[in-house]
Image (cartoon, rainbow, N blue to C red; front, side):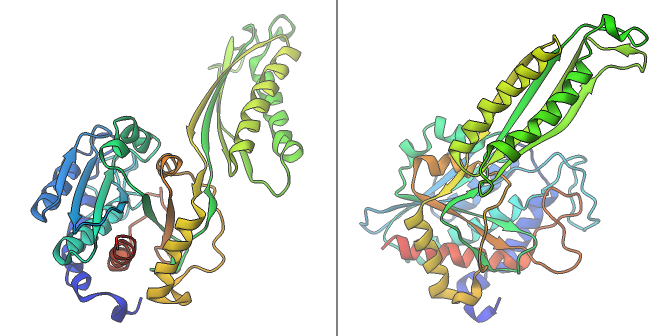
Length: 390
């Protein structure tokens, strides 16, 4: 990133925000445990003149700043939680808590939004209401949904809401936008197959749930290959099968755990219907019973077309086309910002974390957020806020 494109006010905050990001990194907190992180965020926002609200989504923090007489209301969201991963970076600011790590860059997202919040509070270069939303529990615990259930948009109405995520594998500081379905839904399915236990030497007197599970795994593959249109994305992954303890004992039951993803809501619904049907039918063929616990977790993240176009234009006006990730494609990961987008127009964008050799993907014990993109991310939020709140 050409430093000439970074406003002086943001550049002046860079060292402070690097220190803050690394402080958060060294003290990671898991979902709904973000007490110290929330304290830090609330302290900073209060110091800068925001009205601070705590408790939405248990540990969420929202800061509100009203400037002028404008009626427009903007939400900017950052996630705060860490992952249950043991860090192996060896960095001087590595996690001080064994088994907990900021392995997805939420420390960086929080620092980016704080930098933008501070700059906007200092300059007051907008007209309207700014809501900065610091969300807990993005990593599989649906903190966004919990904040909504607790009245996020009733307490802090927004005309549009935006969020960003760093992404290794893309050039440092470049921004990626895509209207429509951008990130996949993510559902978990727990299948329990009950047969009849017995001795491994007399299998004909038992109903082997392991064999049933094997047939289910094979049958599930045809749901995508023969049931979903080739141009639609769908994933059915059997990540775990648990059954038995001894080689000569046929167990009474077995458990399968599936991850299911789609990029269209109707495909998501189809997968649920067909997986349930296939599991029950395959179990019945072998005289076994099956129970299906289908857990619909994160919906498809659908970016509003108009708001994505607006967000992209803000980036183009600032950085030109060279500042964008070209030909952005949908991502098969999931993100609970999707819940906010079901309730409010907005967009979710990507900022490149670096694509050089030795780079590490998120959710890896060797990952680290790239501090070189802090200023770019913060400056983008500032420009977006100034462009929206006019």
